[in-house]
Image (cartoon, rainbow, N blue to C red; front, side, top):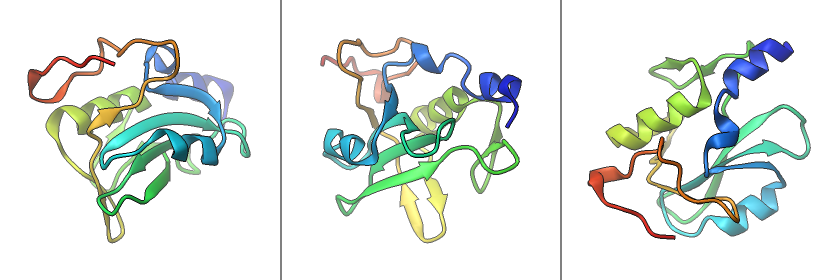
Amino acid sequence: MSRSRFEQIAEYLEDMSWFHGIVRREMAESLIIKEGEFLVRQSATFPGQIILTLMDSEDFPQHICLVDLDARIKTSENEFNSIVQLIKYHLTNNIPLVYGDVVLYIRKPVCRPGSTPSSETPTPLGMKRFY
């Protein structure tokens, strides 16, 4: 993936409280507890790879690579210009991510330590969050 494409994909990612930077899988799993909790991270094993880590309905952590081999950000139904756009779309509209037989809901961001919830990330049902 070219540097310019990576910059486009990752646009505004650093500003999001749910983006944790480079985090190992085991650490990410320890941060999500309830169904729908999520964070986005860069893979510690595969530099440049951006991963969505979220808890499924059976309390099992899922790790989804958000960028395919063609440097596209897509789900089974849509393609997005940035990761922020994908997260906001699914969080705001309560639309699940579907990967094969797995249906996943992005419901509650897990903020990185020392950050406050991102104003760009809407709270479902207009409720205010306190962390």
